[in-house]
Image (cartoon, rainbow, N blue to C red; front, top):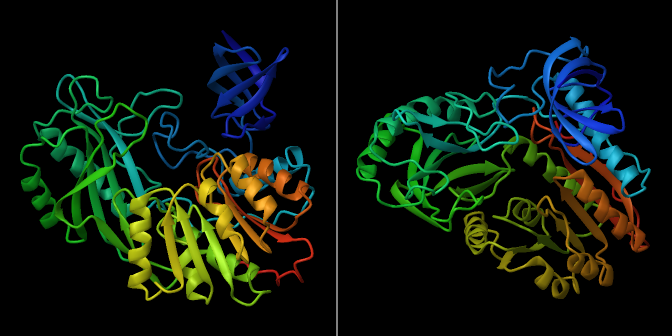
Length: 458
């Protein structure tokens, strides 16, 4: 059924919001202020999903998306909204979450916008499938489906990664390897993973497969190394399980090495094929001076970095004179963090352990002056929040990738009476998408004078 509606807002994931009788209507691709003809596609208990058919009255912020696949591909949800409007919406998204969920009326600093809206991603994991006629399809999924939108380029990728997609697709298409991303027909190739050191230019190619039986992979990998001098390694990651976890626990080096070298805040980091590292290197660097400014009111002491990964934020703080102890679930990430500490001469001041944050954090808060939190999207669990409440460090810095879970956790941290919010800084790590990161600085009540307000990094 087709209806005409007026779009009044954007949902948390960037869909247009309208009302139809007593139900909310979500329309992907529609913008606030628009009148649009839409087709109802799915009725739920309290809302409708609809497909945008025709914009009758476009919003002034609407633009032609820079990617020709933007209307089909689920990789980006906001390419049709101009950059300035995206930035305003992301800032307001954080403000609204803090007010609605945490009941906090604290000031939120203007969004730190990315200097480039395209060509920023340093990593991609691209699903693969082989058609009945043998052609290879590679691309991200259509929104709300498991159907691949075939692509030969992706403008949000670093151009040096973008240039690899078409020739790699061609080579994989002409191979005899099976492609079975869902592990339904005996297994085979599942994903193509690409990674680059944004500053060093080093490239890494990883094939994700359910099986190691890919005849001739060494020959093809050697050809790739010869074709692209910046390529430092080709790896094979084994993921035999039919799961949404894209990469498996075992990565084999086919040729070269399994990591790229990257410069980050005047440090040298090794980033492996399966390492978590922020996809927007330059924006991630802008976090570090904000963290150091928040700690500037105290003499260097002990900071605990929960969810520390490979030491992305631990090591710059250690280089500034603090002793940092990182807690990270992944043993492989801890191994890399220790190697990065050694490489930068920081092994004495940056230590790491593998473990569950909820189980390990409490004992480390006894002699902790500052706590840095960078949890997954689901935020902090009750056990972790309870540990912080029982032994609140003087400084608490919370880097969040979801305003809703951030607001939920801030309500508890502030509501405990231990903390006041000192600053809230949104940062755009993911232009063209609905995602926004936020660094919130909290000070323990009675813990001394506030740190000087940081200057916005250039």
